[in-house]
Amino acid sequence: MVWQRLCSVTFNTGSRVLYAFQTSRFHKQEPNWLDCKKFPRSVLPAKDARWLLDTGSLTAHLRRVSQGQFHVEVLFQRWQIPRLSERRLLGMGDRDWGLIREVRLHCHNEPWVYARSVLPATSLVGRLDRLRTLDNRPLGHLLFTDPHMSRDRYEICRVPAMAVGASESEQDDGLWGRRSRFLLSGHPIMVSEIFLPAFRPW
Image (cartoon, rainbow, N blue to C red; front, top):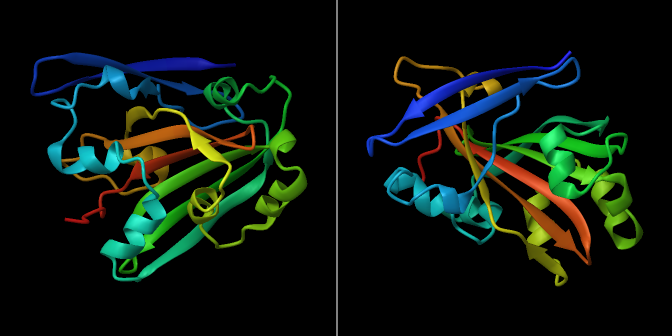
């Protein structure tokens, strides 16, 4: 059985945005991702906006600002049927399987970013078969060094800290995240990134 819970967040601008979280017997709560064009820059926190909307390699940026004190912690990697919105983004059928990979990106031994990647089985062919065995290597580095890579526009969301296993605080009003679809020689891969409470690159 699938159920949906709606919550609302009020920004300083007075605008009001509804976020829907879906839960099924297969998946945790899923945020409602919205096209980044629907989030006016004035709504996004100024200190986070340039990171959320940056089109470069997040892995490369984190390595730079942490002076190389960067590592990947693999939380989860296995074959599953992806979440509904992920299947839609990737053009997958309801019974299509993908390799799901969840990691935390650490800088200065603190978890700065939670990342979830969906790699459809139909994309992991030919030279992309190597993505099946990433271990603790960052996926971002491989994506941005691929000469045949392109990426769609970002989608943005805001999720409760508990949704990505982060500790909550009294001041916690949600964590900003983004996701996008990459194309590698026409094969789609999705990467979502949630900026955790410890994320302080400035």
